[in-house]
Amino acid sequence: MPAIMPNESQPGDFAQRNHRKQSAINAYPQLWRRMIRDWQSDQQEDALWMLYAASYLARTAGVRWALDPFALFTRAGGVSTLDYRADLVPLDLILLSHRHADHFDPHLLTELCASPLTWIVPEFMLEMVTTFLPLDADRVIIARVDQPIQFKTMTITPFKALHIRGKSGVPELGYLVEYPGKRWLFPGDTRNYDFSMLPDFGPLDGVFAHLWLGKGAALDPDPPFLEDFCRFFTAFDAQATFIAHMYEYGRDERNMWTMEHFRTVQERMEKLAPGMAIKPVLTGDKILL
Image (cartoon, rainbow, N blue to C red; front, side, top):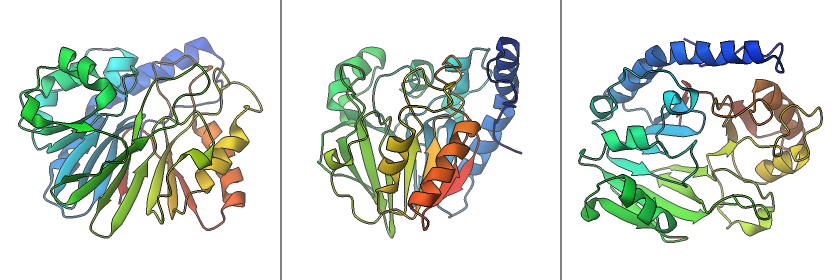
């Protein structure tokens, strides 16, 4: 079953945009159940599933974890019949990155408060998280920049994400996730494409990039940060770049990135870094790690 990837033939048409969103809402319960069934299985392969546009559910080296777990209904609307608490019982760990409404899902997270899992929470989010969620202090690990966290078979290193551009944006942490033989980078919502501001991560198996080519620029024929995005993400020493954060239904069409944008980015990135695999990841996709 394909991931949610709507028809893009008339991106500026309001009726068609609403139809795309409604189709995604209708398809999501089946998509969710398929992802959960696969994730809960006893397969030993390391893999990651896209719960939503920039929400990751993973199984690596025997650990089941999520980064910014999120359900489509929270942003797109519709009535959820999903049982988040039961479906996500096997979770060992949740990582949070920042407080924006397309990353922090209070409805889903509230359902998980009673589960015996560990939460990694950025220091700057701690007050907000503990206000929303009645978490026991002994289940919360405070994430601080450049201080590695050892969790079972994983080493997780938080770093300052480049989410603030000028006066726009909020504090965010990215995460380097390492487990035996693998190194994956999650830089988060990048808005400042100054590569020199990041640590040297060394060789990486892959990077998960969040597509953003300029505020309100999704309908522009030549988005202002196209070249900056492509040069930034080809500067990593990575075997592959997976491009996410498309079809985020809480956004209007001026700010919603699509496969049309991905194809433009892919073409340019492949010229800049011929040896790097450039792949899209959409809601419902499974990626072998």
